[in-house]
Length: 321
Length: 259
Image (cartoon, rainbow over all chains, first blue to last red; front, side):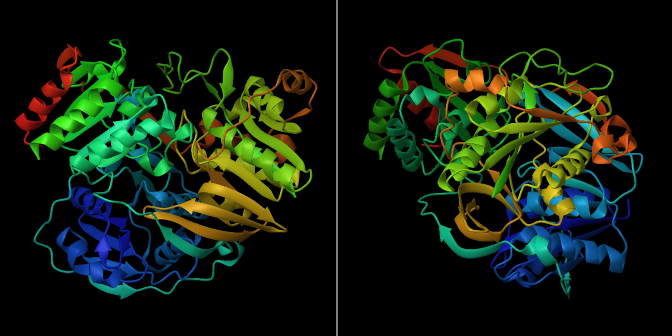
């Protein structure tokens, strides 16, 4: 196909990994790949985005205290007016990406396919792949109406690979008025302190589930994660129970992780959880229940109580250091 | 303040789920339940109404077949009534069509704060609330961890990659809430009894002025091409802990050079 646009989220000139992954994928399907970005420092991503395949970077500028959804969707709609519609727009399955996709879909009156984990070109149109039933089945879908096709892609679905591309040519785009839909304003921003790597970037992820018994026992998971220089994750069950914040959640409704090793502690392996971690390189599971589904995908399964195994494991690793 | 909560009735995710072999749609026969994700929105709505010294909490839902069993659960929690848009033509609706139907239901309800889950457990598209906000021309704040209403402003702590943003938003507005941020109350026996007689207004598409060609299978502009078995991982070694299983884990971590 001719052209794909990628919404490239960034922070202070550092593109999100998901943006580089989507550009890499877009290069496979379209002769022309262009990026759209926003926020302070967006123009600073031109080299990295270009290296990953974007020939042009439309910079929507800073959003001030606005939320991304209405402003960025209005910007993309204005770009379509000015430049003509691309065949497809790729957005990340992120907090802002989803907001933009929803707004854009309603604005353009085009449906949107979300949770995309793979793409294929079939006869000039894109087929999207979606993991369903905990990743036991792959559903393939496509758009049957007029474009642009809007795909919301889960991070970690593609590997980011640089090409020999030069820096993207930056073109500033003026945002149109957004009116009442843009009435929500950010009053203040809070960064939670995090020691160690981000959950979706970590080489080691240690996750806890209902088998921990109490919210307090989650500290075992955090301690082990810290010792291994990893990130602490959680099953939906303990996020729903309010033990840990949503930002820790691994699974269908949370983050997808692909670490070198995933250590599941007291997680039975509901399909909702498995879809978010089953592509980890190695999986270790500790669970009391020998019939827990997590053991069907674990490389090393320990049938035992996390309250016995984890403290000893933590001591043994400390002793090695 | 008039609060509406969008709720979805879904097949029990803990049960056996299957797809219709010809349409590839999720089989929705048998008893449907209130999506767990929606219980948080219902709880927040009830708390907001209580904090405001009383107020109206209405449920909004959509189904092809007049299903109300999930709605009764939310009514038993304390919602005052429900509006169910039910029409056979709705079967197979995509997220945008769903948003169109719900937006009309919101307009008709006169609600000025609409709560919804960030995504449903079964379809998990996660765009319907924002699409609905755009169709209504309203602001939306998604991924709320905390919601408060002061006068005609809703204040939300919104989850972000790095932490959270405090967001202030004038009503009318759509707010989506993440799971786990409040503890949904269990329906009391009294609540369950009361729910049986609470009003559930059933509307058809024509009541909302929506043409059936815009929704359901007919209005959907996306199609499922195939459903295939995914490549499966194989189980590895399984050991039973006899006090020394941690050594096995250490050895494994050393072997893969994590330690």
